[in-house]
Length: 323
Image 1 (tube, rainbow, N blue to C red):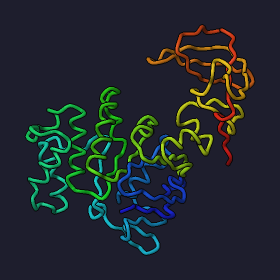
Image 2: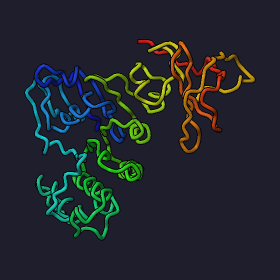
Image 3: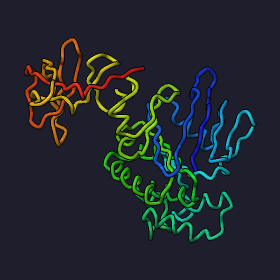
Image 4: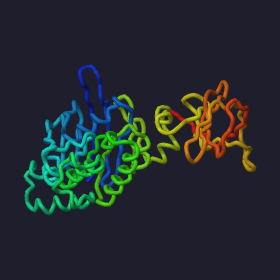
């Protein structure tokens, strides 16, 4: 079932953490709330989970009302049947893997066939044989999988992820990102994921919700968010932007050409190379474009800083933001 959010608002004293928000989290999809710290994404997640009480609005799961300020309905978190995976894993250090995974089932009274359900969840995250280990005997990635298994064991309608990979090192984070995405899709879960990391959001999501200062700026598929940003903040926050007109017209670095196209019209722009960075599969070139500002472009070979160059831009690669 879809999770439907209507007119949700939340303030902490004089600070409005979430402005009036409408959102639908589609069943079976991986939806990501993306934005900088303080944008309201974690507040929204916690209200959906039942860990924070909204000031106004309502939250529905299909036809069931989980929260309504007007109707004075507020279903407790443990009755919403959502799974949660936290940033710090939140594992009990004195409990084995088996008991950590079983904890949510015991807490909600779901003890029928408990052993089978725990073993099934452990198998789904590929931790068979580690049931008797304690958290301190596991790697960071294995601890993360235990936290995920605990959520999956509840057979939740929705799994909520609160920046679950941010505590891991860069290499492990990349590995776990792919593994987590695969597990969510293989099991067929509905996921709501919170992060400030654009790479996580772009690579994992079916849909991205970009937030700033307590409001949703844009919602859509990763490709649409990147190719056609609807707000200057979205263009700057996701990927690199080369502005032709500040906050209005831009192109992405991969569309900067180093020679004039043989077919179609293109506009020539003179500039100076100010920096050259090797990033593995290409060189990232920083360009000083004079009055236009600073651009980024990509090149297959190393160029020299200080060199004067001319780059070309085709009209079809220019995106115009209209607010």
